[in-house]
Length: 250
Ligand SMILES: Nc1ncnc2c1ncn2[C@@H]1O[C@H](COP(=O)(O)OP(=O)(O)OP(=O)(O)O)[C@@H](O)[C@H]1O
Image (cartoon, rainbow, N blue to C red; front, side, top):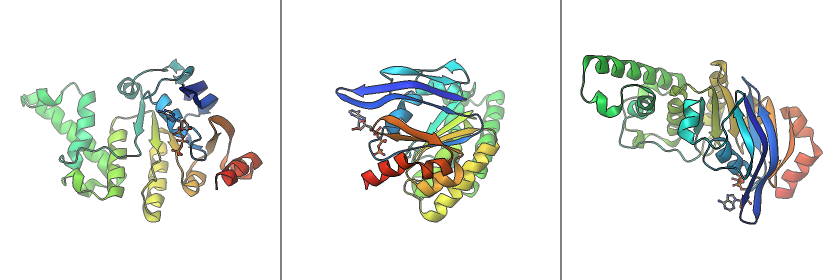
């Protein structure tokens, strides 16, 4: 589904990533982990088109998408969520999802202001889709409140609803559990599993080991810019190099 091959990224004299390759299998939940400074964020930003690699390629379903900007990647089926949630605080929860849908619809926000009959029908269709994804993430009852008034954990669910509304093939999540309490993290785990059940491939960068070990079937470990290991949660937990890298961190 997603093939990352030989990615290197240098920032001046610092090699943040050194020849990193891995594959995210279709229909999998894949975790990318590693101690602080391992290169996870840099890798994520390269895969999602925010940074360009110094060398290496990214393929989505066999197509070379290296250096495609985020909007183009979204249209091709790769959508991401951010660690720092970016919502439109003065819009309602429902409108936040609809804004994303408008970018895909033939009816832009300005055009829809003209209120022609087909535009009204289109608007209704987008509203129903947006409601569907709010229900899916469990915040349908909050549709009409201002997004700025959402508690943090619900904001994260809204961001996921907004990403899912774009109907990605692969969803990349940047530390989805950051800032969540243990109950919210458990709910997030179940939600990510339900996302996968809708045939969306998931890759996540995450510090919460319990979450990663619970839901990922494949894990890639980075350390000091290099791929240290990859395998099942069990293989990773038993890998002496991985244990040493994490002990070294503490
Ligand atoms: N824009 C930049 N300019 C210079 N160096 C950078 C830049 N971005 C990252 N680096 C360096 O690249 C290395 C990898 O950083 P990165 O943020 O990708 O790691 P990380 O695994 O995401 O860490 P953390 O878990 O702490 O978020 C670090 O040495 C960092 O200092």
